[in-house]
Image (cartoon, rainbow, N blue to C red; front, side, top):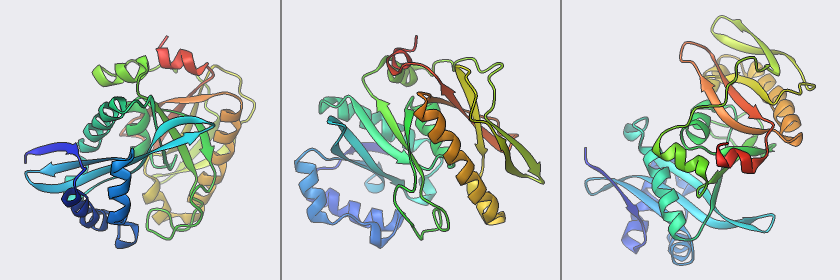
Length: 277
């Protein structure tokens, strides 16, 4: 396997991207060629991963604004099934950072489901992204396997690509802030291998908080949809409450032997977080 990465700019490259999108997602999700060609000419960023000459993965971004601030919106990242879980997504994201800096961007944003902890670990623990915003039911009702039956709540990840924090994550993952003694804002219990939310607290004032979520949310959904709905509701309440109070999500702690993953929330100014001080 000889995997290489490069920007996609030519018509033939973007035509191959259409076929890959259909294979990774579905035919309904394919961005039309006339759109990708236009976006590639006027600020869009398309990256491809190749196994020899075969396109096997892609990442698609476009320029956007939030509160008058320009940034790059990272919208789709996907690989053929046989190439997943090989660390290729991380490599693609670091290439995206490199290309975005060349284009003059200082920040990249994207969304993900807070209960999908594999994505959370990538976005925060490996790349150094932070979360300040929770978007309830961001995409409305979706009927695909991953989203069916639940509101499409999302975190907005902000990746400050020119910051000291992100550069440290690129060269060597910096140590997490100490969570020793940090209170959890949600108590849980286990029934078999399934975690269930119980008592939650909205009055914690510590500088560092922990918020547990299921480590394997899709498995929990298949086993107990009502429990999945409870997790969605209680974590929505907690995340929106503490983010509104100025906390920032800066870490993800996981233990492969446990059915829970913990988000780390810090009550600290963003500029201090980005300077890693």
